[in-house]
Image (cartoon, rainbow, N blue to C red):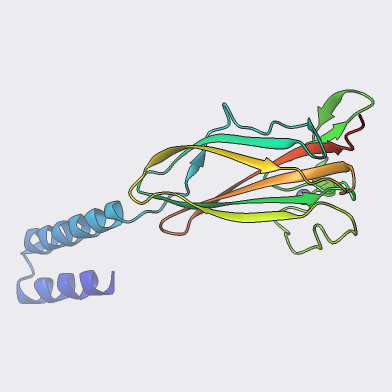
Length: 191
Ligand SMILES: [Zn+2]
């Protein structure tokens, strides 16, 4: 902007009537700026909600396998993703959703705004003894603008049953991130 202004001022000083000349220089500069921003990735990647697994309130048993499935895309290039599972024994929520599953009612409801921890990710998730803790990074092949992901996560035995959060953090090559939180329930497998 500073450059544009000085060009305008100089052009106007050189020839006060030559406003058209100054304006055309501005148009060229604006055009170049627009082209530059188009080639840069300025939008976060997209997680398709449609066929996403796990689904909210899904129940898994210890020793079971959690099938993760989702379709993702980015306008420029996908990068990587992280899957993280932590206990929800304190019934917290995330600004990025994760409903609270009420087993007795068999339904689900969203917390009120005041109950949200919002984007606060700093509290001690998964630090409860015996609770299942999982976190792993996965790379997405270079040059992809869309991908279908299938990951099988073995649910360990000997971990505490209860409510858990499944967190997907999808990052594009430029570093933009989209997060999806899903509330799941873990039960002890009894023969
Ligand atoms: Zn959580």
